[in-house]
Image (cartoon, rainbow, N blue to C red; front, side, top):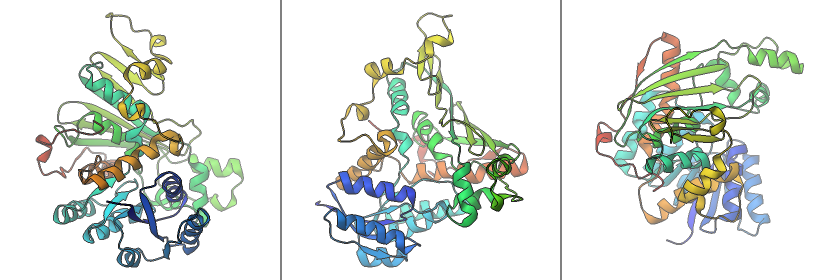
Length: 396
């Protein structure tokens, strides 16, 4: 296969950054069309291509017309969360390989429709969860496979990111998160944290999630932010989304997982990635790991700041590979795009497939149900039992 003909649907902040990543560094892609509900954003992307010496891609506001007329090999879906599944299914029906940006689900039924669409069409689709390619996350995966952490017992992760200014933009329609925070209450962005953990725990590949329980704090962070910043448009707006949502997940093989959404209070950024096994613990927030060599030698200082030493010894091969650049969220964007486009060109299975996509996305809907009822909620098995025989070949 020569250059892949690509269309991109959704040219907001995240979509545009991925497009620039491809335009500057991927010589195996040819963007033939752009689509956005705001035509000016699609036009801007097209003009950027022209300024860099490429032919001007076609511009659309209707994604169906874009896919029908451009007839691409690949569609990158980088819209707001609500449109992801709908657009992915349309592309799959057309036989167009899909790379989908991340987000949470709205209904379990829609996820099942996506699964059935894939199983009927067999069109490749990859969930572009870049955090699965994070350096410390892949370090943990490599250390687990080397047996250094022993048997994994518990994992933690989170989306801990002060998004108050971003959410506030939505009061004038500048960001779609506003409506999500206004009307919903759950873990609305679970995949950055659950993705790497799921790969570590062999979820959908010899293991599965069985049920979850979620709790939400009160929702006062955005009101306090409005007072502090003097944002008159936000005064009196009542948000439904709790400031901190905590989710507990149980696995078929006995492991437990804790997820935390924390985006409307003052805080530093952290995914709170932590893996605990019978031989040791690795923690993002401690920037290191403690591997037990002497029982009883468990001082916290031994786990602080030794991550560079661990990288020298146990760096995952995908981080030993050198790239021309280190941008795009510190290098994870180019890695996820590289894995996606390579899989398309080579005709191999997607590293993060449709079953992963549905399983991780559904946490949003399940957490909403659990918070609303105060009860534990069972996980759907989107593999229909195939998890017992599927193998974990992620990042091997």
